[in-house]
Structure formats: structure tokens, C-alpha cells
Length: 290
Image 1 (cartoon, rainbow, N blue to C red):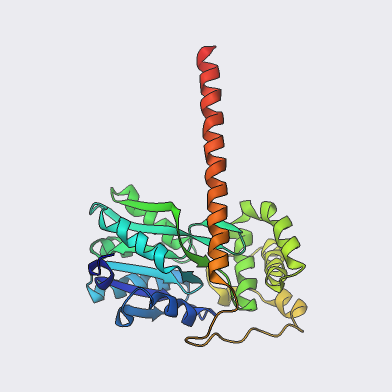
Image 2 (cartoon, helix red, strand yellow):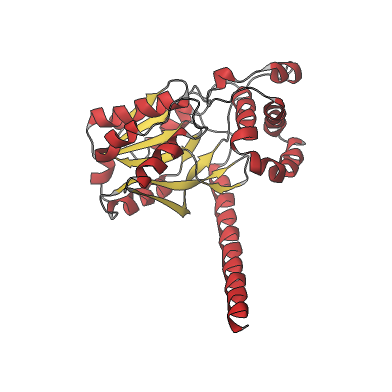
């Protein structure tokens, strides 16, 4: 792994006070010079997105890597992401790997975006107004793609884990948002969440948030300060919040085991996709012969 692209990258941890903020930074320090790592926090998320990109622009390094504070990166996965970025053409302005998500129980895109800093001015102009999109960053990326730039997502590359070790309050807010942002997935995931809730309080709290989100009739914003907490206070009144994770503090989870679970999930998904492609080819051949 050449050092140039690592040294030539500004790293932004986008935080809203997540429990894993310091753990996220500790993981990033395994790859990047500490002086290149900055924590940026603002609300709502669209403001954090803007400040993060502006910081990368101000630093003036060729690359800007934005990582959400609820993501714990894998050193090998991130190095591979940068290996792939090095050979992409200049019109590719954004790249990201996948993460193993605790609540989705699958490998999915979330919480990591590597930007080519030279394209950031156009990206900033494409950030939607707050309230116009539940996915401001995705909306911004799609806007630039529609104008002729390109992005790359590497679904075969796991760069970290997502939503593990979070505060109960943040998990509740995540459930509330999931009920709207990922509404199509909720019915599929409910049996898994209910099963896990029997042994993991995180999932019980998530279910409270989902219930509150489903019942909500007001406007939805990507801002936990605007999440109504009535159900959380009602059902969680006897729940003690988790303690803050301090710099250098070991995690209670075994990250290697979680990453292995992610790799198993990734291989299973690949097998499913191969089967689907074979089925589709068979269907096409059948109708061609008719």
C-alpha cells in the first residue's frame, strides 16, 4: 500500500454525539495520520454534510474521506478502497465500500464516502434544502451523476461495521427514522428484530422507535432533536443509558467476529445473485426458443 494517497486525504468524522465517536477515531488512526482527522458536528445532517465537504475543500488535499461516527472501519477494507480509488478516472468523484449493519443484519452501503476534492464545489451546490430529502447525500450524489460525473460503489468490499455499540437513545431515533427512510424494509426485518429483542435490548429499543415512527403523522427530518421521545421515555424509564466510550477504550464486541459474519453474509448474497442470474438466463432462453 503506497502512503501517498493516505497522506493526501482529509478525513472527516461526521458526528452527532454517537457513543462510538472516539472508537471511530481510534480505528481511523490505524490508517491515517492523526493530524488529518477532524470531527465535525452539526444539525441537521444536511448542515453536517455541507460543513464536512467545506472542510475538505479548505484543507486542499486531493481526497476527502467522510465517515459517520456510528461506523467502525476495518483497516484492510479501507486500504483496499483507496487502492481501487487510485486507478479510477478523474470524472469519478465519489466512491464507497459496504458495511455490515447490525439492524439490517446484512452488508449494505452506509456511512463512508470517499470524495475527489476537486469536485466538491459542485457537490456543495447540489446539497438539497433540509426537509426536501431523507437522504441528502444520496440526493446530492445523484444530482452530480445526472450532470455527467460518476460514482462507484464496491458491493464486494466490506470497509467496516455500522450501528454497533450505540446509545439507546440514538438507536430509538434510528428506528423512528427507519420507519420512514426504509419503510419498504420494515415488514421484512420485523421478524428478525423481534427475535433478536429477546436477548438484545438494542433491538427492543429499536422496535420502540419504529412503532413511534409508524404512528407519526408529522414531517420527518434527519435530525434526532426533532424525534418525539414520548414512547422512549414511557417504555425506557427503567433503562439505564450506556456509558460513553472513552478514547482507547476496548470495545465489548469482537470486531473480527462481526466482520466474519459480514463476509459470510456477503458470500451468501453472491450465491443468491448467481442463482438469480442463472434463472433469468434460463427464462430468456426459454422465451427465445418459443
